[in-house]
Image (cartoon, rainbow, N blue to C red; front, side):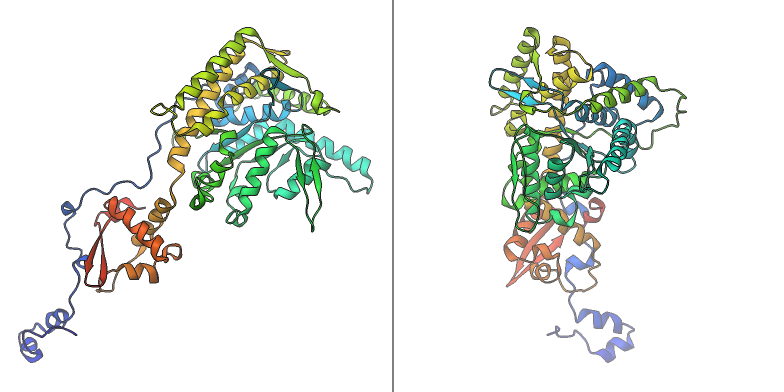
Length: 488
């Protein structure tokens, strides 16, 4: 019921206060009056950790042919060094991976394919970089297509290709079995792979698990009632991955399945197999640079890629030639292995990141193997090559920790960020107070469950974005007036 009026309507009308008299019949909660002073509220705390600045990319750690091509390319196409360097390294791995394995000792021999996850904003010229360094890959595919078209003559045979992008798990396996067995999952817009509707349920777990097996060239058997059953033999194929994506897509990938653990990308071990890179943007600071008529370093890079690709696949992958470490290189590798392991101890720099550190020494060995094959440096990794492989792998390891720390969020944090955005978009014209029940009835669908809703509101209260006050049976939500300044 409205409160008892302090005077009747006739008296208010005579005094010209009828509007105020009517307004006083309905009490307006202080939350809606926008009268709270900002000074009465503490500063809201960020819900997600801020991304720390990364270290400078060690471009000079790249092998000579790769380094010269990258330096020449960024001279006339201003892009982040780490973007160009990582793409070039991925191409080198694709071209080299069917030529050799790298031997650590009598029991441990690794393939030299690489997985790279590169985070870059739209407009950073990811596609431009890919096209430039994949030039010889496209040439190989064109020439092989002509041969295939001439030889098949109507016969059903898989088209030989090196690059796959929008492939289902099942089709990728079939293509590797029936087509060219050394390839890459490659995308400069990896939202096609990880941001689609098919990645909203359980399918990502199977996809990531399959990629984990392909990282090692392990046996993979695919049995389906309604589709083709095939088998990838152990040590009989190679797959590299170069996946470029925006921050939102990478965050989506890192947080898939987060409500059931650390997230599928982490729980399956997929992130441990990846070399991460997230270089700072150059947008707004790029000046036009005239491209030269001749680009000898890029030409040399592309020619080396093409020459490696045209060498036939091995008839027996088990007997693939092995690249060894010389004595000095082996000492450096062991030293780095032990150093990285110590960093995982409680209180040290990589405590809690044992997963990504566990693959670090293997990444070093694989990068060294790629360098040796690509530079035609023989079967022994020397000290200089090992030093460079270590420096490059260390940079990628630091990037992995930096990116995963900021991008992998607890489910209630992600929900809280979403609810803040919902608050920001509301007009709150209704003079009645905002209650927790309102959130359940009208808020985002994903937090209409009481337990999940209360968990999110608790997080927001702890970070000073709102307050919860109890009035009888109602729980009133009061928003920090600074909300609109912080949520965008």
